Length: 199
Image (cartoon, rainbow, N blue to C red; front, side, top):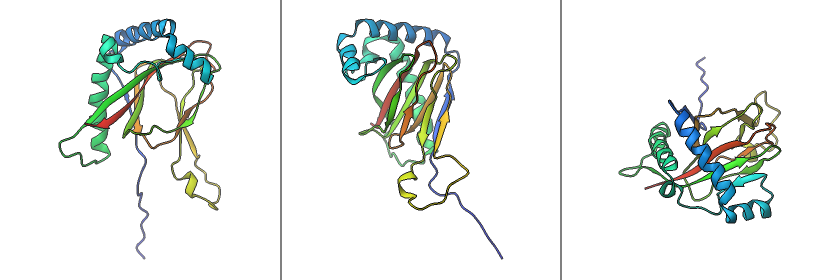
């Protein structure tokens, strides 16, 4: 009797360790900490929404135009997003993934980011500037979770965590739910998150 088991509709996560990233990371860290001190609108948003640390998510929309380190990072994102799109087997015709927004996250000790997706984008991701010992991983939720209903318990987890390091770039499709658990490191966990559209 011939039998087979196929893997259909896999969920792909892209990870790259960016080479020679020390100078870039130092420049991004300096820029991120400067923004956390001087971006009054962003600090007000963080206080209003209980964000432990700082994010430019709701305050600054043109980081690559403002700062050379972010412009360099944007070029790196474009290259890796194009590679990931090939793995996803998208039919883009003459289009390509284009980073249309990116923002700084300075997550302090005790801070977290609850489960969410990124709307109005096709790819999302994060570049890790600093990832001190004990810093939060990123946790992805099995996208089939809501449809499992009466399924029996599985030996595999509904949630998968990945621990980045400084210089790690991660990409995923924007519909994939993810979260950042509590940062247990005494130091800040600094990252740059971003969204891509097809341009």
